[in-house]
Image (tube, rainbow, N blue to C red; front, side):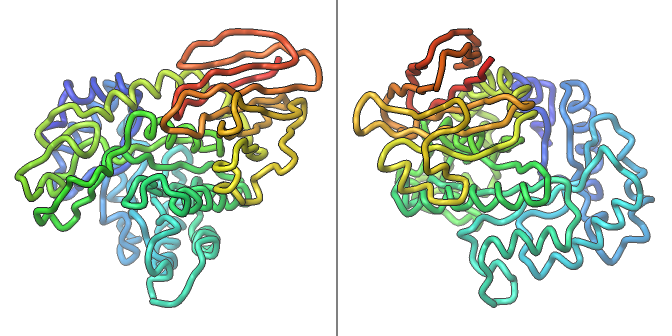
Length: 396
């Protein structure tokens, strides 16, 4: 509650945060703080999902309307945080909650549920084997949700290794496919920091598991290339139990803001990334993902799903080449209101790279890079990208 203030909400707004999905404070136990957060969200033009376990209790459906009447009319309230990372055996009860919520007619407000990643243990919740796509599809068979939110944090002890990155793209591929089947958008979490410490026991955090600036951009930009419609950050404020280490308290290895109120490096990374996001969201929010083109051995070996465009061409785009044989990049291919949009991402998190897009004729292009748009023309379009950077190209 100390950080429910103008100072922090102002900083969040500057970093591009425009809604909060999860707070540890509940409407029942922390009503005053939640009300203050709602008021500040309205003041800073943000949305807020209220955390109210009563609404998510399938045994209390008869009281849902009475409960929602307490806060849903607030201008900042965009819904209720329902549950985080449910297993499949929770879907029946959760479906009843969503059904009742839908009956009450909240057409522009939502229940928020965030789903597990593909590396989670026991997706079924019953100890029986369940593949990830089955988990996602069963959720939408039983729960009438308007979007698909999930988390997959790629920067673990496996680092940027091949197996870890392949699993990351398999997760994006499955989510993209199921979202498309259900004609809904998907939202994805971005990893801000490392060394989760859910137990709160002192632990060794010397292992370098903290996403760099380039890795943070890579995480954001690969998600955008796959068609994500919301970028969610885990997390804004460091949970208090994440501060305990063998060397004492650490407030700098997780989140935009440490639990001591300090500003961490990921705050600035998110703020820089948002300059690009705000400059391109009018395109990507109105565009549908048509597939992914890969360039380079590493990117090509890690992306193997149905979204991969094996021909390496898309509409007017006939191909993409790199400055060297070691150049790796991906291109998200989109239909933008009937036209063509391309989101080009430097796959490397270490090196600046140059790639060239080749087209079947001379066209005009709007190119948005680091939040700035330039208009150019030609048959070939060379692009220089910093490590992890993404560039939007829209054909005119």
